Amino acid sequence: MTKEDYKGMWVFAEQENGVIEGTVFELLAKAGELKAHNGEEVIAVLLGSGVEGLIPSLFAHGAEKVVVADHPALKEYSARPYQQALTQLAKKHSPSMILYGATPLGRDLAPRMMVSLETGLTADAIDLGYDEDGTFIRPHRLTAEKYSHISSLTNADLR
Amino acid sequence: MKILVYVKQVPDTDDVRLDPKTGNLLREGVKSILNPLDANAIEAALQLREKHGGTVAAVCMGPPQAEEALKKALGMGCDEAYLLSDRAFGGADTLATSYTLAKAAEKIGEYDLLLFGRHAIDGDTAQTGPAVAAQLGIPQITLAGSISVEDGWVCCDRMLGDMRQRVRAKLPAAVTVCGDINKPRYATPINIMKASKKPRSTWNAADLGCEASRIGVPGSPSSTKGLFEPEKHNADTVYFTGELDAMIKAFADMLQSEHII
Picture 1 (cartoon, one colour):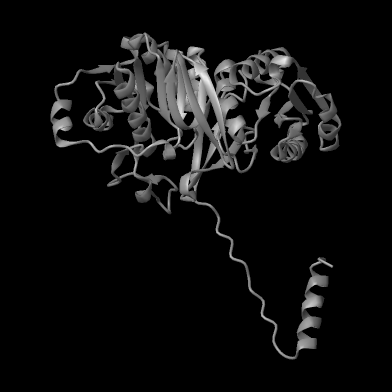
Picture 2 (cartoon, chains in turn green, blue):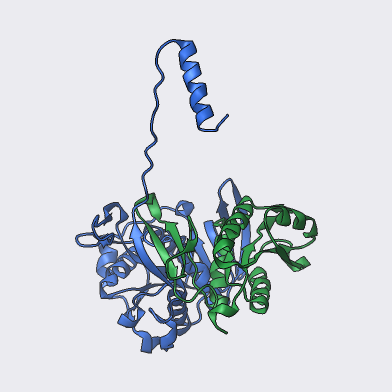
């Protein structure tokens, strides 16, 4: 597969006890902005047990499609079951990127996803965009706000 | 119990400045220190060893001078040290780093617990611990504010901002620790003297059996494009003076012209 075969911007729709984490809506909005550049679909990915009631709010906040994994094993967050479920979905649907909120849960899960999908991962992005060559870039903030830097992915998010 | 503590040598960020012309980090004269949270991880490991017996090994990836971080770990009381050093490791992102660190764990073998500082003060990604756990296919506990081991399980309180969450994971497991988990001990002169006699190994990519395509720059899907200082926003202050009515009118006019009302 080449870079062009990976399509769709995934937003990991973090939820706990049936409440969607606030940053999910921010990420959906940001993915909507990126769509102007890449024309890709904004897709929310919802993992949990008995979470179908949360789907309408994801559509209301800009998701064009919602992928749901509803299973009793996903009721409470645990790194390995979530990693396994999300990896299976990502390998099946090949998104071009996955966005996570930099929450305790997002920080717990995203590095494991980086390993299962062999992708790049940038922590603490404060913006997302494309540079003049069309490479996806993510400026992020570093400790003590002394300096920031732009990380650029050479191989897109999935390879 | 066999505990591996992963440590990193980092620039002292109180000392870090950017070259205003090139935007590069000014590294000259910036001293290197043991990543502060890694000292908490070492302390946690030493306390567990005191309670349950076993050994604590410190593992560090870096250039030859990263030996200093390992000396500090030995001086605090770790039993042995492994330096993973090879020019081919240079430029590694967190994916390539986690692969290399996991290869070291596999070579050391028979580990029960991997300990990490929650994040390093230079990169600040907090990805390495969970990524190594994923490479090894073992469970993890991030943000640990306490740690204990019972009957083959590691139990921790996770520090989640306004709440603590008590969790456990079956050994072998990886744990990343927060700064409030303990107060790291000092390296005592006697321990520093003993440190020079403790076993130390230096391993390169071939020693670890690393695939060349998975380490350093070739193994890193992400790279740094550049560095910049955050923009400073200076807000303009507008003063209204004169009679109260005139000030109110001027204020209202301004709000209207800015389309706020």
